[in-house]
Length: 156
Image (cartoon, rainbow, N blue to C red; front, top):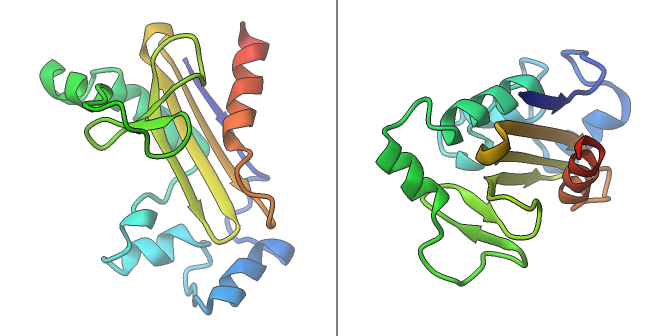
């Protein structure tokens, strides 16, 4: 099962959604903001994915659900080798963040944030569930984990 939260579906942001780009001085010739442009620079690993929420959720479901890589590699991605956390409740496996306390089962994926935008991909392999949340934060960053908690509560 894949769950995704999407915006209005407009391909070219308008109004307030353009503000962070102007503040950063980023020129976006293709109208996508900010991912397509930043990803095209080649050195911006933080913007390496340009996709809608449904595509991100599907990718996470396939990647962390063991449908793309060998089982040993998938297991390494989902295993946090040390107890140190990257941030409160967020550890790191092999290229994947391991979320502690986000769900009752193992929850992995990745957080993302960039000048006015927050995102989270959470996959719970035991529930065959993948959630992608992409948000425009307008200065109110850090809410994506709570959105996932609320979604999981509603699905319980």
